Image (cartoon, rainbow over all chains, first blue to last red; front, top):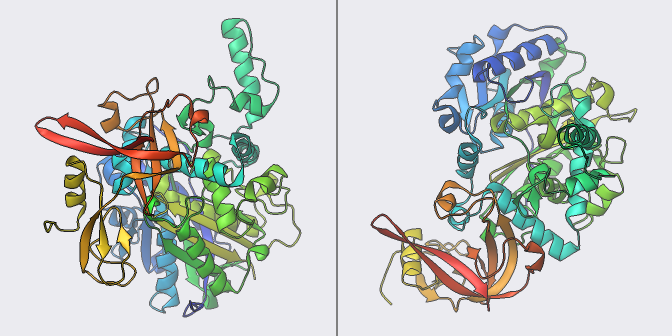
Length: 421
Length: 138
């Protein structure tokens, strides 16, 4: 049986920052990381000396492909002035920076370093949509690609398997999209800070102006059900089931827990860490869950001694609407086949029993793939410190939050539990 | 049967010959499609080739409108979508494949669980011949 793993010594987060996410013509990866780093520096309550940073771990999936520039570790360590300290790049597709975070934690837990900068960056919007799709598809399993599967295609297939097994349908996925869009306007860093309701009204206005008549959409689901505004990408994944193409950066300052109070009175502790790897889609035990997520969750719960009930809110990798649904089950928040009912009842809303993706999720906050993992942890950190403003989870004793990150078609999955002690 | 290495290259070569082949572990009898050269159940490398009947059921599917470049080259796009699926083979195990013989514009008519049989899609790419594994309704 699997043993419960422990860190050699505790690790705490004492600072965090992220750039705004979006498509930026006039900013490159360095500019975005600089934005994240500046915010992180200001966030360290009692201040710190950047020259005391021992090392950098940086997640980046494929700026090699997107920007024709590789080897981002030293570019960023030089940017923030810590060269010649070591810089290591981690790659786990869309989970690249969750791996950077994990390596940074291990480096401190081992006793080798006391202060580590971890971060992530990706710059995708300078390529065409087709080029980005091709770049992302580099992270599928070869057999999937040959059968014509795209990323949305793989998750579309997961949806058809889930629908057939549990009796859910497209409307249930719309509930997830609507929920994420309700959170996004409350997040100043989000790429699409607009509700579906407002988007629908705007679209009605513009169509009325242009064509004289407006479509008869009454509800958000009427809008999402109209292929003119929400065309199919890979059935049953439509445009509003898919996350956007984004640029962005994120970073965090990690220190040994024993010195954390030198930097802030409110450090956030790493309570649980989990990572799993996945087999190809065809070789999985079942098409309605992700084995690697379940493994990562088990590892994180085992290390922390916590259970899914203890996780008060979580960021969950929603590259596609169906991914959020499947993962809230894989993480143990809801029983298999019952997640869609819980979503329908409002359990995952900001004011629900288990708020999911208070940031707006990848769908609305944006998904610069290499920056995503640490941006999810940034949201958990912000919430646990009570600094989330209008999107603050409305619970008086908010202490424990999770972040789940997925790479490829489930090839790399992580689950991280943070705690305010 | 001739001794080809238990590799993806050999698997693709067999598809060109219209054979759906997997590998069977001589130690523990586990089998794999596509083939594995190392048994992940008992870690033996003692394998033999086995041919699949080429029948199965649809386990999952998607109708793809936004196609990758190599499918665009074959004429697929928003107006001409195609179907990709996962097929559960009669012998057990699953393969990723193209799904033919159904209308990608009517996904509601495609049922998970429907019986399928294998079909091989051949395509000339320059001087090379490519073969894609596909299934169609039985």
